[in-house]
Image 1 (cartoon, protein in one colour):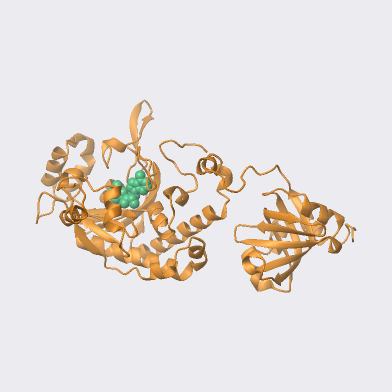
Image 2 (cartoon, protein in one colour):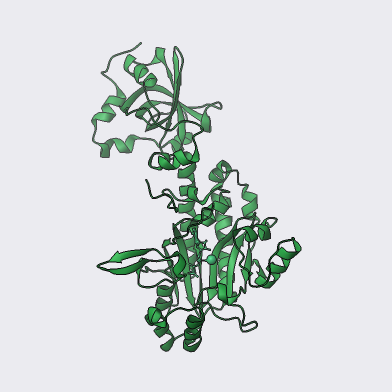
Length: 451
Ligand code: 4AD
Ligand code: MG
């Protein structure tokens, strides 16, 4: 067993300043291009097993996982000791030769010449087969899991794709306030906070402010957190979620839905083409997503009620279409579908009345297939002053609470439309996640504020 510390390449590396050693480290995702070469890798211990003269330390660095094979006869006593004396999540550095190895996870391994524990820590509290509740309690540690990191990588890719799409169309990204003075999406789900002795509400949407901005520049979008005091414990509700909200001047509801179709198709196709590794981990066949083809069909609320009645539900015109009903409507679908023209009483005050059936509005919720349901909510907005005042009254809202918003209809008001796409709902659909919680690192729900 060679045991001289002198000539230790790892020790030399660790003696250097991080800014220098950094450049000598190979990322695990790049090992495939380094077969036969000697490399340094570093990361967290993902798994460890050992026998009398052969130990395996699996290292993950965020870009992938690699197995390091350590033979007692080939390494120093220090390396052998370190390889056998680590915890899950200890931080290690390894130096060795990259080899193709079919039996190793990922298909490559490092035949280690040296391995060093940089930070040992304590026994990691998360093991196999733990309950969902426990994993939520230790979310600050569980966010390093491959499943969460891969979902976040996907979300980053999806949002980049959405931004590119909107950018190509000439949109600008704008910011809207989180502290607001009135509820935009209904008082029942608004979070109230104290604001210097007064009251403020956390934004449920950026929409009303975007409506002010489109009169300065016609195509804007905001990607920001939305807050809803939603007491529902469902796999699709969070109290804090991130919404992408485009708003467009001179757009009617038909144009609005066309744009949504194009956006969703683009995202699905880009994901299917460029994120096959992640899709595979979530057992999503890229073909499902390549098959998504805009324009999407529309189903009016009236038709949806008929469909649901045919399926034996006791439901009538005027009843709400909630989670369960949506699920039934799209259970067999492979394409998203717009649910349109819902009764005005159950829709937001800012939605324009449908001229062909004034009991309803010009809205469209995009329902994702496979039983997922709503991922986008959108509508044409009321652009006429008198109609808006009337809508506020009908909805029993005080005009004075929406003073500035109503005033927009006095100066240069134009037909306009917009939509909000829930980013976590979209990821849940694309990755077939059981719960929306796994599409956000620190989910906020009715009974969870920690960690
Ligand atoms: O349908 P919503 O409430 O529409 C609006 O907020 C509009 N102001 C959007 C607009 O036209 N600019 O919400 C939009 C989307 C939903 O379709 C859903 O995807 C998501 O936001 N969403 C939620 N996601 C997670 N948890 C919740 N509690 C959500 N509520 C809505
Ligand atoms: Mg909605």
